[in-house]
Amino acid sequence: MMRRLARPLTHRRGFLTAAAGLLGVSALGGCDRFAVTPRGRQTLKLGEDANLYVQRLLLTPASLAKEFPDSEISPWFKPNGTIDPQDRDYKALAARNFSDWRLRIDGLVENPQALSLADLRALPARTQTTRHDCVEGWSAIGKWTGVPLAEVLKRAGLKPEARYIVFHCADTMEFAMSGDTETANPDMTARAEGEENQASDSKAAGAEAPDADAPDSDTSKGTPIRYYESIDLTDAYHPQTILAYDLNGKALPVSNGAPLRLRVERQLGYKQAKYIQRIEVRDTLAGVGEGGGGYWEDRGYEWYAGI
Amino acid sequence: MAAGTALGKSALGKGDVVETVRRRWMFRHPLVIRLAHWINVVCLAILLMSGLQIFNAHPALYWGSASTFDRPFVAITDDQRDDGTARGVTYVAGKSFDTTGWLGLSNLNGEATGRAFPSWATLPAHQDLATGRRWHFLFAWAFVINGLIYLIYGIGTGQLRRRLIPEGDQMRGLGASIREHLTLHFAQGDEAKRYNVLQKLTYLVVVLILLPLMLLTGLSMSPGVNAVVPLPDLFGGRQSARTVHFIVTNLLVLFVIVHVLLVLASGLWNNMRSMLTGWYVIERRKLPAGPEEIR
Image (cartoon, rainbow over all chains, first blue to last red; front, side):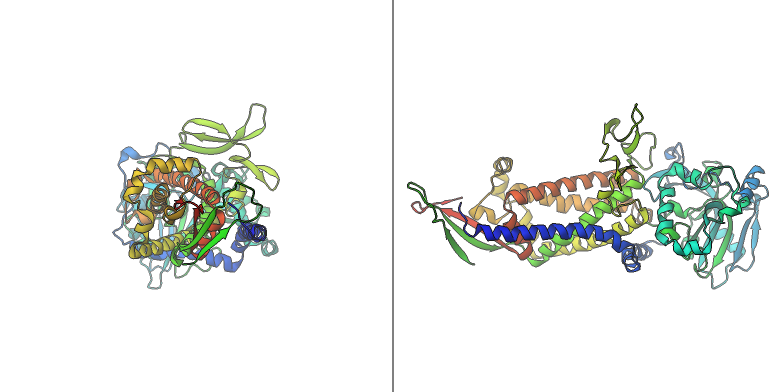
């Protein structure tokens, strides 16, 4: 087949191909630059905002996470994040088998509480065998026994302005830098480091406390930032939201969050706060950490972790 | 419809047969379908690359509800050879492959780095699960909305049926169509006005099976959605759903590769013009002496 005008056409087509190629390549490089601008981050967040909105429309208090038969319990419940807190206070509590440990409940409550493990075990209990889904992608099935959070909140009595339940934990995740380092250190840097910690499980625990030094004793490292998380009242009053003290019929091991951890079954693993020391009832998340509502949330992860 | 005649005149020798090519313009792709196609290109590219970023956070796949960490179905990692040098290694169903440079160990800023998928394939390029998830979910929404508009339009106007459901005579010619593809011979003339049977079946599988499977397996990984619809049960558990999500991703990448190669082989500019402007050229070749068109 013969074509006239082939040459100029090829010329134009070659130009178009090159232009399209360049556009494609620069678009990909631009993605990463776009993602770090405030506007870019806000735009990207739209998808997860939509997730929260749609899930809140679909999920009712009666929507339960699947409960599995005991035969499906994972032989090993993979511990993640902190698996052995090096904090001096925590180690002292663990050494005495948490007999001195008290769960404090304060903030916007009528009757602040300080409950021992025995107190918690005396309250109504719920046992549920559920699947734990990590944000990284893996899952493990465990049988949890604990007191429904609603029971504890009922005893404390929420004030009308209560909106959020904040969990303060015993494990130090990192040490805050001094004031001016922090300003010189944009959020991205902190985030990339945090990512590293979470992505490589085995390193995570070691990285935060390479030696046996108790974080509290070494002030040169800065102020310890301990793990914190939060949920709102919708999830706090869900029947499967419990403060678990047993895993697979035995006292919760240190690696999985002894003496008490949160189970909020319709969300991902980083919401399941371990080593809980204090429950604070608040009207806003502003003022907790950097305001995102949790340790990982302040490092770029979504506050609502339903997907 | 515009009809043009291009007649080759130059450098004719004695005995050459002069061949007439009649170009008929055909309006092939309505605006909605063209838009849906290109939006899908952007969505799938970003979903793929942010998906590989998410995969890198735990580069192993399992079957069932929970992860069997010591027995993954697929795992991409790095370790050391006997001589102490680092290598990338990929395990599939118990077999291991050295994938240094591509999977498990690849260059990041000029340094050999242990990561499942290389940085050029992930979004963001560096390891950042939180931002990868944001890209993934934003473009998952765009993909779903785009797909719904395409399906509603396609079903409502009958386009989907006309374009993608093979007609009776086509099904009988299935064997011939396979032969044509293998020898890269493509239909011309009237037969080029419709998609060929392999093309129709492939698009049907992609549009009605593979892409919806991506959405279903993706939602199967959501603990929130699971509390409303027990989706993981469809696939044998959440980890199975995650594995199927990954396998279907591979099938879609394979589809895109073959799709682009066939676009190149069957006329890049005609195909590209038609997906940009809607207009596609049907060529009929005619020998001046003969009454019959060569198809």
